[in-house]
Structures are given as structure tokens and as C-alpha cells.
Amino acid sequence: MEKQSKTNPRIRFTKTSMLKVPRSSFPGIFYPVLKFMIQNGYLRISEENVLDSIECLSRAQELCQRPSAKQNRSLEIAAALSEGKNAVPLIYSSRRTKSVGLRFRQSLNENAKTHGFAGVVPELCHNEIVGWDKNAASGKKRASKEESGGSIFVPISLRLEDDPLEIKTRFQIIEDVLKRSRSQFIQAPSLGTTYFSRIVSMLYLLDYATYYTSIFKHVDPILTPSIDYLKSELKTRLNFLSRIV
Image 1 (tube, rainbow, N blue to C red):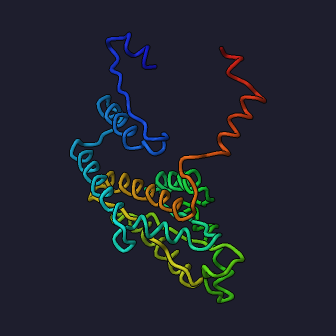
Image 2: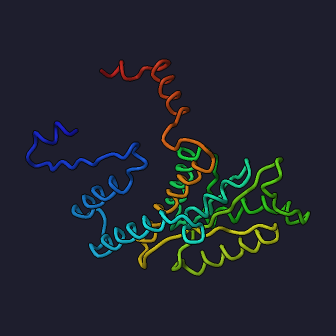
Image 3: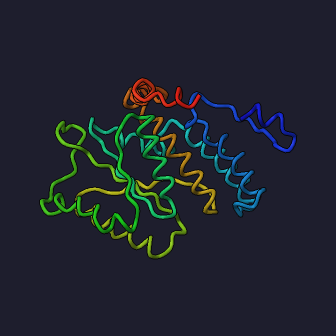
């Protein structure tokens, strides 16, 4: 693509430096594509909003470097996700944050080598919250980190300050259900006053949470041996590339 772009004077080629792996290079990959989409009329986002989001990312970076969990929400979330050996994150988002929830789950998979489950309001209100009924009925307390058996479910809420009333109310009711089960939400952090800034900063802060989780779990966030094995086996068993070339 680079070679073809440079031979065509009508095409402007932009190269983004990769930080170790593509998923850790998200801001650098995202903003050139965003600029292209805006300049060509595919998206309508003001320059002021874009600049505000970049400023929020700078603030998020500073917050993520603080050593105390009280001042570093990413570190606080990672500590909760590393409680015991069987902590399972339950990521609850809305239609406004479901893309962040998907990214968060995938980053947990790749960086922290852990499973995670993502539900979206209102759909999770029709089925997933019933999973809390057993603990609520029995009065069973949430498992402590000293307990070796069973899983510890860690519900994480991806809410925004300016969510519509319907979304806010649903999250409030879900929180009531969790309290009956002796559990509670961890609120995903975000920065900024616009929807765009809050979404981008929340994604960034949760990405950092997955890196801190990998540190707590003593795993390398860069290596993905299962994916490497899958690619190798697909090449051996199917070898599609040889049929194309």
C-alpha cells in the first residue's frame, strides 16, 4: 500500500509508528483515520472536539502514571480484577459505550490473558441480571480473595454523566440488584465534557487497566501464544496464501 500510494501523486500516504503491537498503538492509528473521515465528509466532528479529546488523553496519561490506586482509577480497576485467582470481569455498557466495552474485553483477553464478559443495556436487563438472583436469594456474601473455590465476578459499569434518563435508570436498577447480591459496580472512569472525549478517554484508561492487570497477574501483555499457534496451524492446514499468490 505504501509503494502504490507513493507512485500516485493524488494519494497522500501517512505512516504511523507502531508501539510493540498494533493494539498498543491505538491513538496513533486512530487519529489519522479520523482526520481522513472528517475531511472527506464521512464524519461530523468539530476540530474543537478533536483537540479536546487529545487534551483529555494527555490528562489520562498523567493519571495512569500515578502510583496510588486512590489517584489512579486504572490501577484501582486492575487491583479488583486481580483479586484472587478467578476474578471474572462483567462489563456492563450501553449503546453509547458498547464499542468501549468490546475493546475493553478484547484488551483483557490479549493483555491480561483473562476471560471477560460484556453485556449491553437494555439487552442485559432481559437475561444477564438474572445470574445474580441465586446469591440474592441465598444471602451469600461475595467470595473473598482468600477463598480458592469458585469465581469472583467483578461488575464494571461503563456509564457517562450525560446518559439519557432511560439508560441512567436501568443502571440504577441493575445496581440495586447487585447490592442484593452483596456486590457493587466499579465505575469506569472518563474525562472531558463532550461525548467524543469521554469515549476516547474511557477507552484509554481501561486499556491501561488491562496492562496493570497483566502486571498483577505476572503475564506478558505483548505475547499472544494462542493466536500465534492459530495462525501457524491455519497456514499449515489451509495455506490460503499459496492459492492466491
